[in-house]
Amino acid sequence: MIIILKQNAPRAQIDAFCEELRGMGFSINDSQGAETHILGLIGDTKSIAESWVLANPLVETCRRVSEPYKKANRKFHPDDTVVQVGDVKIGGGNFAVMSGPCSVESEAQIVEVARRVQKAGASLLRGGAFKPRTSPYSFQGLRAEGLELMRHARAATGQPIVTELMNTEHLPLFEDVDMIQIGARNMQNFELLKAVGRQKKPVLLKRGLSATLEEFVMSAEYIMAEGNEQVVLCERGIRTFEKSMRNTLDISAVPMLKKMTHLPVIIDPSHAAGLSWMVEPLAKAAVAVGADGLMIEVHDNPAKALSDGAQSLDPDQFDALMAQLRPELEFFGKTLN
Image (cartoon, rainbow, N blue to C red; front, side):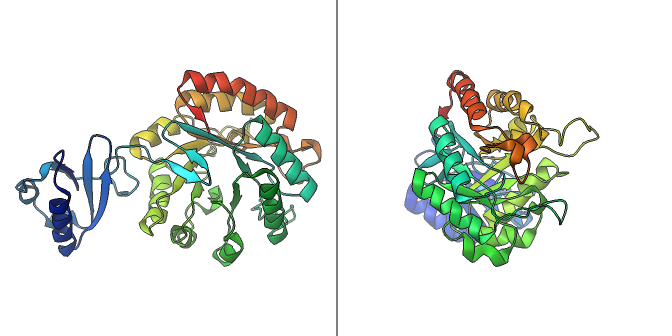
């Protein structure tokens, strides 16, 4: 149930009302936006009568919410959430580009790529230290050493780092990571979601290969239910019957997720198609449809990349892409952050 309070309701009376509701067994999501003040009740609201709520002089109106996700629901939080990673803002008109190699391969590689993508306009450095691969014989990443190399790149450029966590046992290694990524294969690893929900740092959650949008948002709800509301959703393509590309980018997911939830939504065009020449048009489409950012793979020598070279841009291609995106971002009222 959501309870919409009257404008300029006294804070002391609101606090007393909230305390009364908590005493009835409800958790409360208190969201005060520019024009509305909403109390979102979480719990078995069938036990509370709407007439009782409406009788309170503080209440403008109330209505029940049928969706199973509550904290992520835009009805509970009408204004866009802005997630901050270091000095970088994502959402609310702030557009962030996360860029870097699929896998961290050496210090020289990650530092050089970090410098090039930062110069072109990327504000966050992405890179894989722990790599989930379809084949057990493929390169699995440098693991702890890869995280250390990413920290070296951050020291050289000042960019916050984004990298994937695959196992709760690795959490101590991620204490100095600025943003934790949960990959598509772990979107419904609920124990992992709960573990990152207990962390006090932003989470980038990727959509599963065959997940519905409600399942995707429910995974975000797992994180938020543990107290961490700094979640960014990432559409990275889903599995369909089409075989001409790696996955099918569900571009319609962006406006639908924006309607369903208040969380920022970004697009990963590199994983979506798995083809470097498709990154540019898909990135432009992401801006046009209202995404809050992009995650783009860039490698200093894609032909020799240890993983996913076919979908990676080289630094010169990334420069050209960012130059094309700037006027588009300006046209759609987005600020490159």
